[in-house]
Amino acid sequence: MRQIIIDCDPSPDDAVAFLLALASPEELNVLAITTVAGNVPLPLTSKNARKALELAKRTETPVYAGASAPLLRKLITAEHVHGRTGFDGYELPEPTMALTKGFAPEAIVDLVMQRKAGEVTLCCLAPLTNIALALAKEPRLGTHVREIVLMGGAFSEGGNITPAAEFNVFVDPEAAARVLSCGAPITMIPLDCTHQARTTNARMEKLRAFGTPVAEAFYHLLKFNKIFDEQKYGWEGGPLHDATVIAYLLAPEIFTGRKVYVNVECASPLTLGMTVVDWWGVTENPKNVQFLRDVNADRYFDLVIERLGRL
Ligand code: RIB
Ligand code: CA
Image: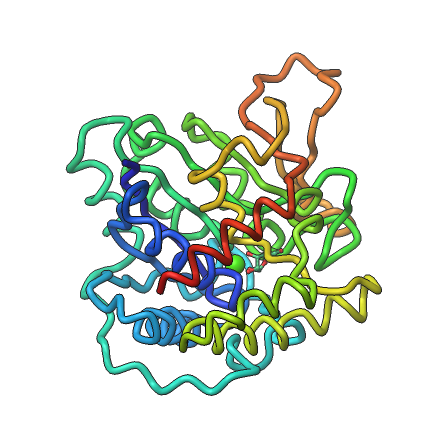
């Protein structure tokens, strides 16, 4: 049983990730969901998280709101991908559940440090501002967590928000650099991996066939969410990025990668937010990241769809 905290900026792929975790109580215990500004501003990411929890009748899950802006930079959002609300494509009722009192970075510190070392896994699906702030409050966090598993970065796939940078890292590169040097065991799931895992029509129809409110809602939310990437890349379906983090905890064997040195460009205007990956070990730098470059997409969607069907 893993104790996990999920930090996110819900658009649908974030919500699928935490619903996948909540649908897996044999393997995972979700201590809290924390929200951050990213795909859309903080009020909307915090609202979307609660909309999805209410839909799935999981309102006992605490939701703490966190940072509304990156550490140093102006917030960059992605309404062009996810719509103005971040949950465009299907109307969900305004949430009635309240946010849990407290600032997400502080909640992360408390939830981790009040448990023994090596107990809590941080699942990071968004810009890493909350995690960096938690590390600022409690520098020992990095060596107290069991693991940090994050969706972010890219190697040979290139960027998705600039030619060089993946969105989560680009929005707050300083936060990403801080996390990568915090001393925790880090598993990174980059675009090289998530771009292999696309919401094709057959997979979406399989989800819809459950006929549950969750299946129907996420059929439509994901259908909207894939439009931008289908037009940009010419694919059928869009990448289901963030659920790979939870799928890794449930079925690590469907991923492959290697331990490498990774760092983040925080200065150059041309390549800001680029994750520089020493895949071939040409430096003596410490191998700080398990970098997962590939996934078995069919087994990934079999897992995600079957579990979502339970809600
Ligand atoms: O680049 C993909 C990431 O950006 C995902 O986490 C997606 O939800 C967006 O936040
Ligand atoms: Ca996200």
